[in-house]
Length: 443
Image (cartoon, rainbow, N blue to C red; front, top):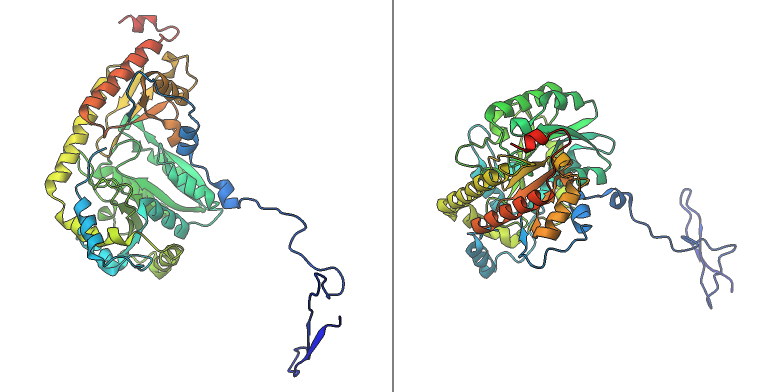
C-alpha cells in the first residue's frame, strides 16, 4: 500500500511534504528496519535506589533471632496529649483538600510565632512545613549540596543523614563525638575535615543516639568553626526542649548572627506523635547569605510532593497553644527518672560503660568486648540479648559507633527495671576476665 501523502505549504526550511506511514495488517510501510526502543526487556533500579542504604533497617531486619519464649519481650511509649486536637480538625471538615506544598500560611504563622525570639526572629516566610523531620532533613541536604560535594555528619549519629546523602551522590565525612566529654564534638577533627567541597555541617542537639545536650559554650565553639570556614549548618533539633531539669537547651540560631542555619524539627518527639508526619524547616539567615536562591530552592523541592498532612496542620494551633505545661513536665520527669535508674543499674554491671544522658530518649552504653569473647561485635551481643533475655537494644554499629548499644528509656519504670535486671543476668552469664586482668576481676 502506498503511503498517504499530505501536501503542506512550504515556509522557510520546513519540508513541503509530510509522510504519514500507515501500518496495515501488522506490517509497517516504513522503508527499512523499524526503530524500536530495545530488543529485550531490561528494567534496572536507578542509581539513587542502588546508593540508598539504611544501616538500622539492614541490621535489624537481618537479625534472624527469636526472643526467649519464656520471657515477655521488652523493646527498649508514652501516651500523647494532643489526640483531641486531631479529632476536632477532622470533624471541622476544613482540611480535606490539598494545601500549598510548603504548608498553609496560617500553620506556618503558628510555627513562626511559637519559635520566634528576639535572638532568632522568625516570620511565616522563614518556615517550610514538611512530611516529618526526615523530609525536612532531606530537603535541606538536597538544596545545599550537589553530587560530588561532601557534608559533615556526627559519629555516633542518626543513620538517616548518611542514607539520604549517599543516595544523592553526596560524600559523607564523619566527625567524632567524645564519650569521655559527654559526647561533645571533637572540634579540631571537625575543622580538619572541612575542604572546598564541604556543603554543610550537620549538628544534632539534643542527640540521637547519645541523649547528650551541648552547653552554650560548646555551641559557640561549633559556630566559630562554621564562621571561620564559611560552612552553613543544618541543625537537627527534633529533640529541642526535651532536656532534663539540670540542663538547658539552647537553639543554635539564638547564638549566631552570621552563620546561616536551617533548623529542622517536628511534632514527633516533644508531642509524642511520631506517626503524624509533620515537620518543619526554620530558615535563619540574618546576613542574607542564603538569599532568595536557597529559599526558592526549598520551595521548588517541596513541590515534588504535596507537603505534610492537612489534618495535622489543622490541629497545629491547638497542639502548640493548648497542650498543658504539665504534659511537658511529666514527660521530662518520667524520662529523667528512667535515665537515672537505667544509668545507675547498668553502671554497676561489669563489662558495661554507660554514658549519662541529659535529654532526648536514649542512653548509650559501651561494651568492653574483651570481657565478652563469645561475641565478635555489638551486633552479635544484641542478637544474643534478644534470643536469651527478650530485651531489644540497637547495636551502635547502626550509628557508625561499634561496641556500644543504644537503650531507649521510654518504657514504664517497672519494665525499665526488669530490662536492666535481664541485661545484668545476661552479662554475668557471658562475662570473662580479660587476659592479664584476673586481679581486677577478683576485686
